Structure formats: C-alpha cells, structure tokens
Amino acid sequence: MNISVTGIGITKFGELWGVSPRSMAHEACEAALVDAGLDPSDIDCLIIANMLSGMLGAQEHLGAFFSEELDFFHIPSYKVEGACASGGLAVHTAINSLLGGEYTRVMVLGIEKMTDHKPELVSSALMGAGTNEERLSGLTFPGAYAILAKAHMERYKTTEEQLASVAVKNHYHASLNPKAQFHSLLTVEKVMHSACVADPLRLLDCSPISDGAAAVILQNTENGKRKTEVQIIASQVATDTLGVAQRKSLTTLKATEVAAQKAYRQAHILPKDIQVAEVHDCFTIAEILAMEDLGFFEKGKAAPALVRGETTLGSKQLVVNTSGGLKGCGHPVGATGVKQIVEITQQLRGSAGKRQVNGARIGLTHNVGGSGGTCVVHILKGI
Ligand code: COA
Image 1 (cartoon, rainbow, N blue to C red):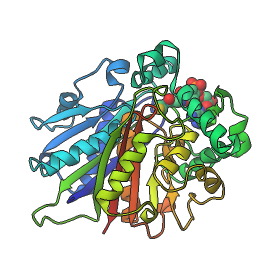
Image 2: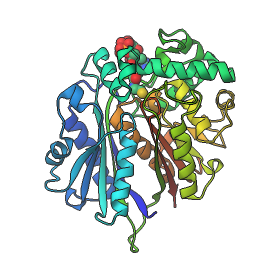
Image 3: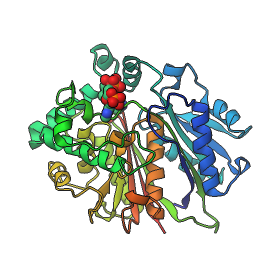
Image 4: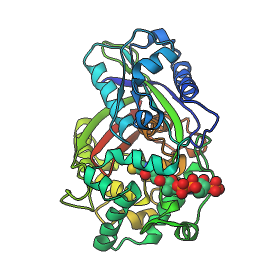
C-alpha cells in the first residue's frame, strides 16, 4: 500500500471549557497543513470522525459544517461514525478512497466535544453504541467492561492490582505528553482506593469524558510521488455482535483478533515486529484484552508482563500507549483513533520527545467501538 502520513495536528485533550468545536478543528487541521507544507486547496477530500455531535450538540451534517468552517469549499466532505472507533474507521475510509485513485490527498479530522454536557447525558449518549436491551436494562460502558473484567479475573486470575497497573503506566506516559488530559502520576493504591464505578472498575480504571481534536493528512504516493517518512502498511476493520450478551467469549474481543490477524498478513509482519502500539484502553481491562487479542501475549499472560514493566517506556520489547492512552491522554471519542495515528507517526519520525521509543520502526494502532462491536487496526512503518 502506498499511503503516506504527510501531516499531523492535534489539540490538547481535556476539559476545554472555553474552546468551541470550530476552534478545535482550526487548530488541529491548520497544524496538519503546516506540518505537511500544504494549503487547503491541496486537499481533495475531508472526512470527519465524530460520534456524538447530533445527540449532544444537535449538529449533524458535519461534512458541510467543517468544510465551510475550514475554507475547504466544494470538495467532498462527510462524516464517518463507528462509536469510539470513528477515528480509526475514518482513516480506513480515507485510505480506501485514496487507493481507489480518485484523490491524491485526504484530510481526516477526528473531533468530539463532550464536557459541556451533564455526565449522565454523555453516558446515555455513549450507550448509543450498545444494544436496545443494554440501554433498557440500564447498562453503561463502565458496566459492560466490568462484565468483561469479571470474566477475565475468573478465568485467568487477573487481579484488581494488575488492572490498576495499567492506569499507573498510562498516567506515567501521559505525564510526559503536553497534549494529555492528565499529568498526575498514580499509584496502584490510589487507583484501588478511588470510587467504585462498576465493580471491579473504579474511577481511575476508566478513561475520562474529554474534548479534543486530531487531524492527519494522508497521501497516495503511487506513481513515483515522493514518499514521506511514515507509511501505512495495513488497514483492517472487523465487526462482532453489538451486545456483550451475544458473544461466545467474554475474555476475547473477536473483532480485535480478526482485524489484527488480517493486518499482520497485509503488512507481512508478526506481532513481535511491533515496537510501539497505541491500543484502546477505554478501561484498564480493555488494555489487557487488547494485548492478548493483538497477539502480543498469550491469553492470561499480558497482565503479569505489564506489571513487570514490559510495556512501559524504557522497555526494549514493546511500549504501549506512549500518549497516555485513552486513560491518561483522554478519550474525546471521535478524535481517539486519529490521535493514535498522530502519536505513532511522531514515534516513527523520532519526534516524540520524552515519550520517544528508541529505534521504533513499526507501530500499530488499535481502535475499538462500543464493547467490541467494531475494531480497526492500522500498522505504520517508518522509512
Ligand atoms: N481518570 C482520572 N481522573 C478522573 C477521571 C478519570 N477517568 N474521571 C474524572 N476524573 C477526575 C476529575 O478530573 C475530577 O478531579 P477534580 O475533582 O480534581 O477536578 C474528579 O476525578 C471527579 O470527576 P467527575 O468529572 O466529577 O467524574 P464523574 O463522576 O462525573 O465521571 C466517570 C467519572 C468515570 C464516570 C466518567 O469519566 C466516565 O463515564 N468515564 C467513561 C467514559 C466512557 O464510557 N467512554 C466510552 C468508553 S467505551
């Protein structure tokens, strides 16, 4: 696949009370254009990743909304939605439209504004990603992942301390990321003494409610056009049942396994070839599931390895969620999958500053919608 990441831009993630979606979009997209050395007129298509603007902001029709706002008049522009995997799906859609030959450069903008609304409204809006039965029974996403956590604890003897270690690692990485929502360091004890949200998940096991935007410019480098230093070498999507109750297994996200296996085949690599990964840790258990379902560790082996520091900055094997992940960097849902591409691009360019994984050449992004109904995996390579 001859797809280059030509430009990246990102806002700070967090509670951005005084910042509108319009200004977040300007900041992320203009940074990406400057990074790529391009003008708006160089962009052939704008794809917006977003989940909640209709439900929370009463604003749909984001393609026209943002193409007007950003002076991208008259180019094709539309929204892609796949719950928390909207960002990854939008990148996948951009790649396919580039491979179709119609466009040379596509900009993807991931954006979400969540903190202006009451948490209970945001929680029920997020449950738009679940089934009717889940909504009617009062399930929330912390509740859905608590069910997965309980199953993993029962089958693999995973402990609450091990779950807490995910939050400790990701807050440490976030403390090194100026764009992250949280810069506070955590301890296992602090996580385990935070308020219980859905047993066994506590406040500090959860990703937060966040605002933020991220943008990438992707370019088709077919026909001898100059390749940039970061290429996307695999882009795969898989789906599974929308609801948790319909799954054959509660200790595996099948969509992750399927998307990952297809991505490794497409990239002609194995999981051991990856040095840096951004995985979808919407709750601490989600990172442990991801590590196993992506093939980095055997089932039941990810949590002990994480506690041993095998995925923390400084590890020689594989570093996971250098941005701080969803847990520490924040989770403005439509922006998350695009932010993952921004972070891995910085790692492969060698421009990640204090978060740099030395010698990173191949990176992976893993973006999940709902409780595993959609999964998007990208593999990127530095040249
Ligand atoms: N991690 C770390 N700190 C957090 C946090 C989190 N996830 N969520 C809130 N905080 C902090 C806040 O900054 C605040 O600190 P302060 O008092 O120093 O300002 C404090 O904890 C209380 O925050 P508050 O906003 O009152 O929390 P809340 O009770 O309204 O919401 C959750 C907490 C966990 C319920 C909410 O963040 C949530 O629903 N997260 C999951 C989001 C989700 O489901 N996403 C989709 C995934 S599939």
